Amino acid sequence: MSRLTRRSFLTAAGAVAASPALGATQQKSKATPGEPRSGVDIVIIGAGVAGIAAARRILAAGRKCMVLEASGTVGGRCITDTALFGVPYDRGARAFHTPEANPVARLALQNRFDIYPAPPGQRMRITRRYAREGEMEDMLSAMVRANAALSEASRKADVAAAQALPKDIGEWRSTIEFMMGPYFCGKDLAEVSAADLSRAAERDVQAYCRQGLGAVVVKLATDVPVRLSTPATRIAWGGRGVEVETAQGTIDARAAIVTASTNVLATGKLRFAPELPKRQLDAIERLKLGSYDHVTLELAGNPLGLRSDELVFERSSGPRTAALLANMSGSTLCTVDIGGKFGRDLAAKGAKDMVAFALDWLDNLYGAGLKRAAGRSHATNWNQEPWVLGAMSAAAPGGQFARRSLMESINNRIWFAGEAVHERLWGTVGGAWESGDRAAIAALRVIAPSAPEPKQQPKQPKR
Ligand SMILES: Cc1cc2nc3c(=O)[nH]c(=O)nc-3n(C[C@H](O)[C@H](O)[C@H](O)COP(=O)(O)OP(=O)(O)OC[C@H]3O[C@@H](n4cnc5c(N)ncnc54)[C@H](O)[C@@H]3O)c2cc1C
Image (cartoon, rainbow, N blue to C red):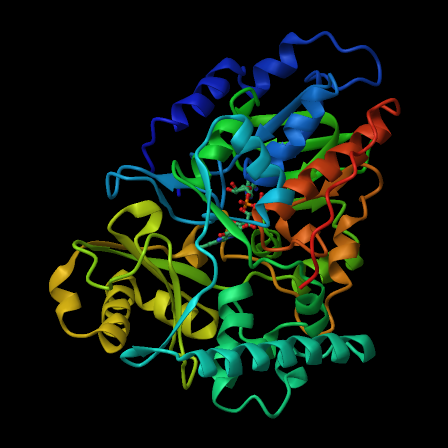
């Protein structure tokens, strides 16, 4: 994440250069009693989607903020790399779910990004052929029953999603387990709360951005003051405001918004003084990130015979499976996505093994000529990205309530935001944006009671 060289990154770097060093900020400003010496109202930890959304809201309210970003780039889990393959390649998020209700998709359109709808439907491979109409109907009916069972079970108790699945989904069980588990949230269903899955908003309708979703986030950060390569190491919140420590100095402010992922928070890389209340510590533990990675292959000449952005699953017989997104944005790039325990173990073995799996998997489904067509390749490893440490949060069984706990402020000084802090859009770009916006509104209401009220968000369809 931190090694990218992107032209678009320069925009954010410009914003950074414009903001003085932390110590200098403190020395220069003439603070009146009770006001932060830094002149900053709210410090935001993290320049991912949630942090940028929060900053834009605070700036729009006429207040001052500063975003501290640990890595060398803006975007967090949204990062577009144009250097690797010579075309925009999203290493993290790439799809706008429910684009008509997605705030980031709306802003991307306003900023003249080329957003286009994904082709409708998905294809299902059964070894070397596609599923027939009757087989697809069986699969869809099994999926409907699985969703109904999740919803039914979660009304009684927050059990593991695996426990809630109906017994009679027969030969589609493993495929459905993959689609609802590793593919949807990066975890196997035994590790996921049925209630969390069943409350998740529908994500079937998708749109893509030809320039890359990460490029959109960089653009939206244009006027935001971001300090790159500045990890916050400690937040003291016992006094009138907050004091945020970094290796480059301490910055004081009235409040802080923390958007670091739950896995980063769980490592203790960012400490709190006093320690966070037990309720929030428990919530962080229950909302740990799943594992999800892209293994991307250049396949010249369309050997798979698929259209642009076609999504393909296989009727699998175990967890050793994946999802294919073919010819992304009309390019020769095809991504094999892996996740859950299988994906985590494979990623731990390294990029070579991941690429070998992807080629074997495609070879098994489409035939031997494929390996000859393969050119350059790349595999992400989000579990190893030091300031993210995973893919997306999915509540552990019994842990759905944790999202609400993380929404509560810590003594009206600290607010958490990020994908984990959204009850229905967790694990998404849209959810991260809304949570950042919401945290900023809540913080502004405390530090500046005349701040604007939140706008009503468009309703998201339920799963
Ligand atoms: C492979 C993959 C594919 C995905 N696909 C999609 C998709 O298609 N559609 C979709 O909607 N979502 C997708 N997601 C999920 C989406 O990327 C996330 O939900 C979203 O980007 C999270 O944004 P965030 O701001 O909450 O967190 P992050 O993006 O993690 O941002 C947090 C930021 O905080 C920084 N940070 C952490 N600790 C500190 C510290 N101590 N000091 C300073 N900075 C710190 C981090 O470096 C990071 O930049 C995908 C995720 C992955 C990994």
